[in-house]
Length: 270
Ligand SMILES: [Zn+2]
Image 1 (cartoon, helix red, strand yellow):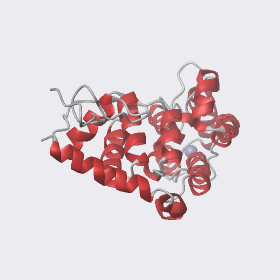
Image 2 (cartoon, protein in one colour):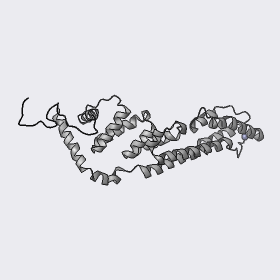
Image 3 (cartoon, protein in one colour):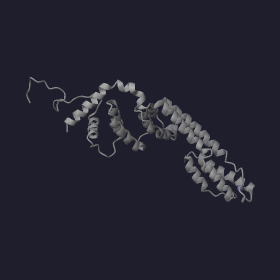
Image 4 (cartoon, helix red, strand yellow):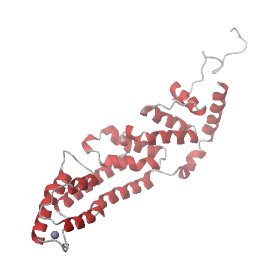
């Protein structure tokens, strides 16, 4: 169309698009899909979800952020835990932190790359190292120091043999399962496998008594508690509640206005 009097400005036609620095066309299309309820239910890639969260956070679209966080939470097993930690800290999402931290505690240090370390930050990385060292030492102590039979059941015919076999089965079963570097297993699975072993001269009554003590957690629960307390400490320190970052929100009033403007722009494209 010829119109020399009215210069064409960005957004007037397809040939003159509005340029939004740092925002890809795909991101804007995801935004439109979300705004108008057409976001496809199939799985988005990890990269798409992360970038979209960044986009919605930048323009303070809180409903969209909540929706994407929900999508990330339900697909959390597809993300590397270091990436989840990064998202949790950056976008103040406490709910995904414990799962990610637990996964990191179970990931061999040699499998964590420099990039993973950059993503989770030094503080989390150092805590992962300390917690792995502490849990490893705890496992070795539990493996070598068996739960002692302090009182035999009334029907125990041979307390000495009962003690000796319990000691041998603990070391050959529990000890081996706990220290097996090739097949590392969580405590619950180890206890389950241990109970399936043959207990020789250990009387049924004594065995039941000791299993009850095992089921109560005994030494095993200390590891879980240690992990969960370290995790809570890091969450408090690193993942601020959105309410505590109001100063950030105030400095973004312009961006909020931009988000509203985009909603209007999106409506006009319908
Ligand atoms: Zn006994």
